[in-house]
Structures are given as C-alpha cells and as structure tokens.
Image (cartoon, rainbow, N blue to C red; front, side):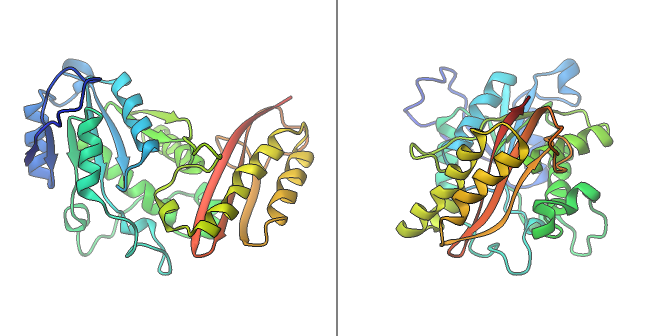
Length: 302
C-alpha cells in the first residue's frame, strides 16, 4: 500500500486526506482499515462508493468521481485494464495506460483510495469460473464483441467482492454495460446500489472516451457523425422515423463502418416496436479508421 501526497490545488475538497494506492488485496484491506471502513459499511461504518475504470482518465471519469462523492463518505477508483473484455483482434495491448496521470486526477478530485491490481491478482492462471451475461449478453454489443459482456461482468463482480462498495457509479455512455450490471446486481442479490451518470461530451458533441486519443484529425471529424445521427433521430416521434433519420446521417459519412444503430428498451436492450411508449435508448457503434466508438442517447416515446 502506497500513500501519494495530496496536491496543493484541491480547494474544492477541504479535507486533506492522503490518497491511498493499493496494488493488491492485502493493501486493499489495509486501506479500508485506514479509512475506517469495516465489513458491512452501510450498516455500521462509513459508506464507500466505487468508480470502476480501465484508467486513461478524462473529464468523463471526473464526473463519475464527483457523483460518487455525493453518494458516499469515501470514494474508491479502480484502475484495471481487464483482459477478459477484449477479443483476440482488439486493442488490449495498445489500450492507453497512463497511471501516473490517473493518480493526479484522482488526487485532484479528492479520491480516498485507488485500487490498481495486476492481472495475476485478479485472475488465477487456471481460472475456470466466471459470469455469463446470458441472452442479453449476446445481442447488440454482444453480437459484435462475443464474450465482451461476460468478461465485463466477471471483473465487476470481482471488484464488488474485493472493494465491498455500498455504491458503484458507471457512465451512461456504456448503456448496455450499465443495464447488464444492474441486472447482475438484481439476479445475484448483490448489496450494491448502482448509479448511472450522464455522458460527458466535447463542445462539438463527441462523447468522451479513452479511445478518442487514437483518432487522427480526419477521423475525429468523421466521428462526429455518431452524435449527429443520435441528434437527428432524437428529433423524430416514431421508432421508424428515429431509425430512418439517424441511419441517413451515418450513411452520409463514408469514413464510417457502422456495426449497428438500434432503438432498444433500456432494461433489456431488445428492439422496440412502433407501439412502444416510455424510455428507449438509441445506440450506435461504428469504426472510424482503426478505432471503434460507441454512443447513445435516451429518448422518451409517446
């Protein structure tokens, strides 16, 4: 367990508590003790909120941390690039790893604890048991990234078991991930309250993502078609009109290779029909150059 000094510029967080960095399970237990967090914190101790991340923190992650600070006395951020979430031809080896900068972000945002385990700490070499995302894990994002949602749920469950948070905060940008985590918490009776945070965007509408740094200037311009498509669809009234206008924007950008554009129920991620009323998620995934991006908006259909 390491202790990083608090930076001088933290006026918005008057309590000067050092940031604790734990890189293994033993360090995590010591950190909980140092923070006065015992077993069953929501019953007798200080509540703990967890923000799970894969690092390369940006303003979107900052917004998650700030929301977590509103929900609990202590905030933990996990930094772990989870190999189970990546397919054989995906970007695990080149995924941005900026740990020192991530610690600076966490310190500036008043985080109490950073948990940064190794792959060896998280997974046995002969690992055999994991979480199955079920039918919901095979549609939409699961159709194009087989096994991705299984791997995501497996690491989230392990982080819940290790960190023992009362609250966990996730971004709405990964809407299917958020829906699947909520389902896992309900199906497995996990004692964690899951909070979704709004997507943070650049001034031009591009959703913040750690993968945005892969984009060339030309690719970044093309990537704006995703948010434009969602905006075009959101201006319509029926599911058919929403899909039509969103797809027209995507088709007009030749640099995009679209995986999907779907209008789905936010809880099940099944496609909604023309008789649907209430909330629906308009979600898109596409490749721009060698970079795959996702985005979504929540609509209310009458």
